[in-house]
Image 1 (cartoon, rainbow, N blue to C red):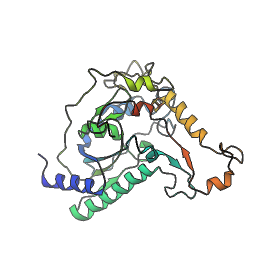
Image 2 (image 1 turned 120 degrees about the vertical axis):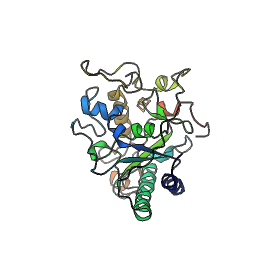
Image 3 (image 1 turned 60 degrees about the vertical axis):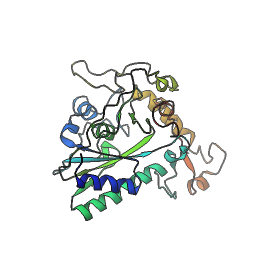
Image 4 (image 1 turned 180 degrees about the horizontal axis):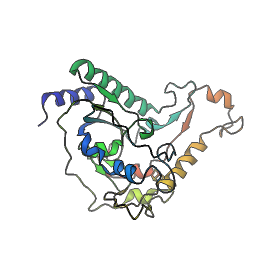
Length: 281
Ligand code: SF4
C-alpha cells in the first residue's frame, strides 16, 4: 500500500491529465533491459544508432541524488491520430512538437513544479531521448507496474494496450514503488502487430553480439529490426516535406512553413493492430 506521499503525487499527476502513473526505484532501473543493452552493446543496434540516429555510446547520466523514477502515461486513442502528428517548427503552436508530446511535457513540468513546491522534493523532468538526458521510459513503466513489453517492442498496458505515450522525471527522494504487475497477455497472442508492419520489421531477429548474454532482447525474442522501422519513419517524414519550392500537395513552400502545416504522420500500424486494452482506445 502506497504511503500518503505517493498517493498525493499520483493523484496530482492524474488531476493534471495523466491517465496512468507509476513509481519505480532507479537502482533496478539502471539494470533494466534497455539500460543494460546500452551499457553492453551501445546505441548502435541493427547497424544504426538510437533515437536520433546517433551511435554515440554515451551512457545515461543519472543525476546525483536521484532515487526514484516517476512515470506518466497519456492515452493516444485510435480516434485521435493527430496527437502525434508533427507540426512545422517555425510558427506552429506546438513548435516542432506533436500535440500529444506537448501535453506530456506540460503535465510533467507542472507536476515537477508542484512536487518541488508542495512536497519539497527536488525533481529532474526528463527529455524523451536518452541522447538528451532522458532514460528508457518503457523500462521504467514496466518496473512501475504500468504494463509489459509486447511483441511489437512497445509497452502494452491493460487499460490502453500499446496506445499510450510516456514521459517522466527523477525524484531526489526514496519513494515506495508501485511495483510490477502480473500481466502478460501473450500466451494466445496472434501477433497482429507483427503481421501489420509494412516494412516487415518483425520478420527477422536483430543480431546482437554473441559474447553478450542479452536476457531480455527487444520485442521479447529479438524479432524487431529497428532499421526497417526507421525506413518507414523516413518515408513518412519525406512525404510531408516540401520539395523544391512546392509541397507534395503543390503549395508554396514558404507559405507552408509559416503556417500550421502538418509535416509527419507516423506509421503506428504495429500499435493500432494490437487488440489489448479497452477497444474504445
Ligand atoms: S511503426 Fe510501422 S514500420 Fe515501424 S515497426 Fe511498427 S508497423 Fe513496422
